[in-house]
Image (spheres, rainbow, N blue to C red):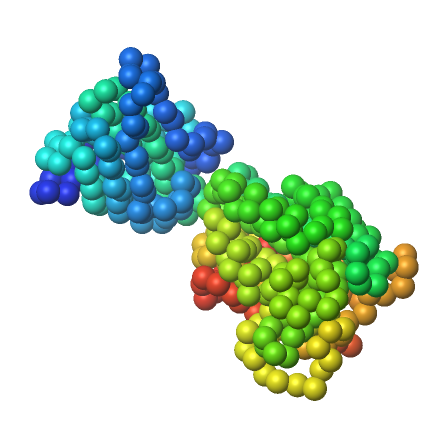
Length: 396
């Protein structure tokens, strides 16, 4: 297969790959890892390794319907670089179709900035940097191209995750009866009928909540993957701070500074920074609606402390940051023991429709069930949400 490569490294080098490849059928994303590969063979073990920083694509798996992509990366090394190599492979098995060794004008800092033609299906980009002492680092990027290929990835290779927090028992607050029961029921439905990989965290402390969110922020996600996060438990609103808080197992009632609580602002920021393209957050807690900063900033007299492939591709082609809360700036019911909270009951009723004829349940359909609640549920966007994005529940 012919390949024309015109190199573009900073300091005047231009790199363009032109590849003519005919693919009889769409390719499917594989589970090939994109972790950094470090090779010490033949190297001085005391050497300082080169560093590769991807500017674009920032994430390791990318989808596009265009026939070209932009690549930007910065390679630095405290030891002079011997070589920088860019290799391109295609298809499920990673057939190599082109490579180019770049000229190095500055042996300590090389910047790649290029536009590369890509073919329909799976494209693998491997960037290798080797210093003069043999220290080698490799990094990969995977680019899925074309509507059919992306559709296959969305319907076949997509992974859906659910992280559910439920707090019944508190060190300083009154215990609740249903949060764990609700989290387990929702998790069971998502796992058995929608194929989600679920994790339930019971009675977490503040540190355990933040540690678990950090763990999910360190995971690797593909562009079509989704993450559902659910909180059930006590919630409060502070008039002075003008902000809502989740109550952790170890939160202290008379904590004026709220250092033992989990602020909605912190939740917004941390969840927004999880590198999963599609995130849906649901909170069944009092004053959960103050997760919306506009609502939170409005003062009140409240007490302070108390389809088909194309359809799926369209829905999952934009970055999603959506939230749903059980109430606005108000108290919400925990329900009676053995009977789900009103919020969880309505959410489960929506899940048990299994999306109707097309087996795809979207947020607007869930909203219809939540609007029956006596309290006012809040739907909205946060963080880097893109207009037109959505979160889908695809029934088995």
